[in-house]
Length: 189
Ligand code: XMP
Ligand code: MG
Image (cartoon, rainbow, N blue to C red):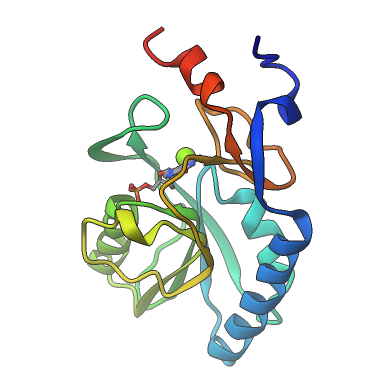
């Protein structure tokens, strides 16, 4: 039986602990501090998955920046890409002539990131880069640069620290692999 309400019971095994994620934030924060020195980037959080990573990462960046959010949808049923992407909630800021840094939880096929980068470039940004917590590189099927990332990850469905299954489990403080029976419980229902 799956105890769906107790989030620690739905994890098969941990992939990245809270300490692992903290180390990623410290390392990436130091790199971004160097690379954005003298600039005032617009940091764009990709809703909703990136918010946990964004709040920890930006607090490791010694760079004055402004914050905005963009919500685009790519995953129709929660864990299979539909390939169709649309803007759900647009940016509030004007990106023209700005150095834009997109923060993502995970880049998988790359479709979502390519859509966001193209949209922001088309609106006249000076530069558009991405910092993702995780990079599922083996699944990439479009040509898009993940300029910074915390770690590569294999072809497993991961949840926690912002990553969701059916919009649940984002609040796990670590990243783990879901038990197959949890996926079975919800798929085809
Ligand atoms: P694409 O394929 O467009 O997908 O690069 C990017 C978005 O897909 C979601 N995604 C995942 N979410 N566990 C999740 O919780 C995963 O293993 C996973 N793989 C992809 C994620 O929202 C990301 O922004
Ligand atoms: Mg997601």
